[in-house]
Structures are given as C-alpha cells and as structure tokens.
Image (cartoon, rainbow, N blue to C red; front, side, top):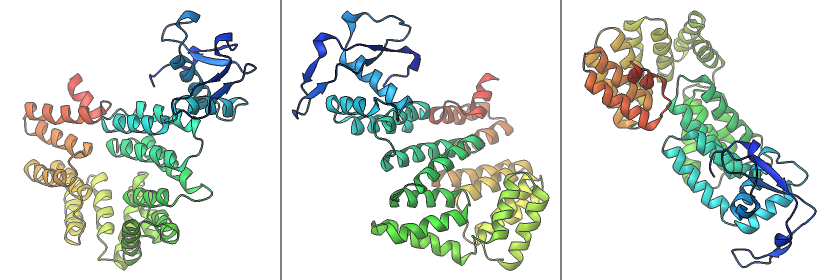
Length: 364
C-alpha cells in the first residue's frame, strides 16, 4: 500500500518454483498459476533491477494490483484479480479501513490512492464509488475555495448516478451533497429517486423531509438556480438582480436571503450583507455556513468582536470545519493576537496539511 511510482514494475516469466497450485489463506481450493502469463513485480523505491533472491509474494501482489489499477481492462487483468483475491481474500475490508483512516487524518491523497488500487480489483463496485465520492466531498469541504476539489466531488457523485442498476445509497448521499452546494434541482431528483428505490427507513424519512423543504421553499426555481450560478461565477450584478427577483416572489425563503447576503459580501457591501444574513437567520437559516458568512461581513465592517462570536457559534455546530477555524485565526490576527492565531492555524494544518491560508501564515 506504499506510494510508489508505477514505472517500478517489471514483468517476469513464471519461475519454476512458483508453477502449479498454491495454497490460499482461507483454505479454499488452491489457486493454479498460469505459466504462460508473466508476473508483474513492484520493485522497492529507487531500485531498477530485481534480485530474484529477494522476490516475495508482497512484491508480486503489489505489482499485480498496480497493473490492474492502471489498466483495469487489460488482457490479463481478470487473471491478476483472481490471483490477488486468492492470496488476499480480505483485501477489500482491510484496505477500505486503511483508506478511511487516512482520510480521517487528512491524508486525502493517500486515501484516494488506496481507493484507486481497490477500484482496479473491484471495477465499478458501488460501495467503492460512494467511498471515493465521500472522500472527495470531505476534501472539498476542507478546501471550500478550491473549485477543482468541488468539481471532483461532483463528478464522483455523477458516476454513481450513472450506474445501472442504480445504487440507492449513493443517490441519497448525492442528494445531500447537492443540497449542501445549493444545487437544489439535482438534489430534488436524487431524493425522489431514493424514495422510489431506497429501503433504509431513516434515510427515507430524511429524503422526504429535504424534498419537502426544496419544494416548499421553491428552491428548485429556475431563477434561484440561475442567481446562485451567477454569484458563484462572479457575475454579481446579474446574480443579485435575479435573487432579488426571487425574493419578491418568495420573501420567507431563508436560502434566498442567504444567497443575497453572500452576493452582497462578495460585492463588498458589508452592511447590506449583514442585514440580509440576519434575515436569513431569523427565518431559520442559522446553519454554520450562514453564521460564517455573517462573520465575514462583520469582520470586514470592523466588528471583529461580533465576527468572533458568530464564528464560535458556528464552530459548535461544525467543530472540524476548516473554513471556520481559519477565519477565527484571521480574526485573531486582525485583533493583534498572533499567538492565538497561530493556534487556530496549527489546528487547520492538523486537519488539512495543504491549507493555503494556514501555510502562508507559518511561512510569514
């Protein structure tokens, strides 16, 4: 499972010592090695020549896994898969657990590498596709300003939605992901599909509740959707015009006021943004992202004490939200508390070692 470059793979003719059936760990029928198919071997880092005396099953299995991951439709891929699964029947469980641990520790690159190797062994397995989407979503949540991370997560969920037969659990998680991104039309379609196909009663109830929220607040309205994308893409004047149009028809929808406050904040209209975001909170939108947006407006308007209060409230709801912790660090900097700021940014780096704001602080 170590991270190595694929160019360290060499192919060997099957040695006489390995020909014939081999015993499997689970005591099942012995696996028979085909002498006509070469054996891929992964060399140790920095090694270019294989010493046959050092040849091990670990090196052979690692080579096969790499080859299958890089060419899942290759001619010998089915044979290599059977070979690996014969010798490591528990690899899916073991490596999935290892990948989850890596992701929890913020090592998303290694978690995704482990996943890519498993996907080579188990092509288009819905559980692995969902696992990839969840890791990418977690990474996107940690790096909200990184558009590529957001897009990667969206693409991973789209792969799940394209599965035939469909994967209901993947549809449910996709709906939650699109809901969070305010892609309400896509979230609606996912939840409707889950209500038709899903079997988990708790998820059925959650899907029905979220679907009712979308429909009750007209969040799948075309004007709302267009306003969101305009603001997201930086076309602030047109986006604000459209969200104001939406609010004229739906003045009690907190998401509309949030979107207005977000756009006003991006346009530098801090005080108007504060008013819109407080309206969103009054209507029930007191989630961490609304409080964070309000804190940004307060901070830019000079009210750092008020900004800190809102961020601390948001952090109680989302204690590992890197965006909120990082903004607390910025507030500490603005109020001259460098030591406290360092503590916040250190926490950010523990959760995401690649966070650009925290890394820039420690460089300076």
